[in-house]
Length: 94
Image (cartoon, rainbow, N blue to C red; front, side):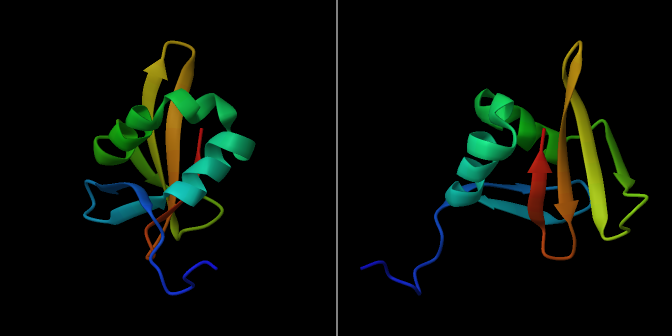
């Protein structure tokens, strides 16, 4: 039987330039790379770099509680982490 009170295993944690701590659990990372955005499976380091040293940070036009972090990882693509504040949870990576 699983320990309900046990903390979730952390995949990674990054402090953004704005001082927010973004924590991604192993279970949530598995959802991101397994179902939502499988192409990101090989780009965990790029996601961490995007959050820690983005080329741009801006507020979402549709939800002011969301910061958009972007950083180019390929000539024809980009990595972006969408972070909902104040919880600091990453809600998307692509």
